[in-house]
Image 1 (tube, rainbow, N blue to C red):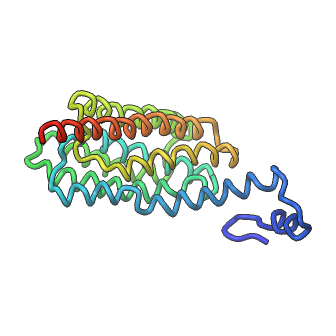
Image 2 (cartoon, helix red, strand yellow):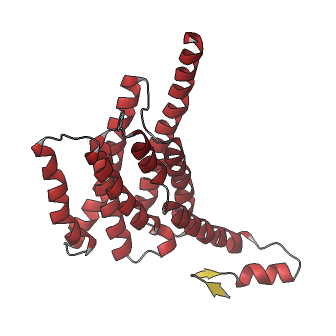
Image 3 (tube, helix red, strand yellow):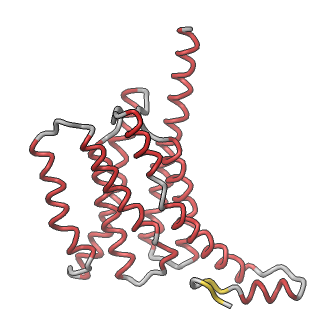
Length: 235
């Protein structure tokens, strides 16, 4: 019995006999289910951040370059996973994250006006190169090198935001809900990537996501508590 690539037969067979499914049966099943849960959750993960910017009409405290690099990283990761034949449950969220990340950057651009002319070179360059990467029309060796670099891209994408939070002692318009979902999704993706026997580089990317997203989430909690204390003292 299979549905969406998930084989329930071993689990159902064990339960019919009054036994709990063994580890070799249960872990892959949990991995598949969690993978699809991540894909489903990813359809709205950046929506809270977009809505917060629209509500306050402000991008205070947000690192533009960080969000731009996210778009680049998602593009490379999606293309690599798709063209290497990984199951959709192992990377499907990347498609939804990429779409939302592009919308988010567009919103940030809109509320960052006026923007220097030089800034517009980056989106134009992305639009010129991204279709080729997503189509997989590049040398396989270059593709591997490009995918290896996307871990550094995601790391570098988070560093400006982490530093900006630290310097301002505030997280500005960062959405707690979006950061929490990013952090939780990274943790789950480490588990599912291992279970799906994804390449080590894929697991490494998820582990980096746990570290960087966890740092930003802890900053949100820390600085919001500090801001709340200041407000109480002022009153």
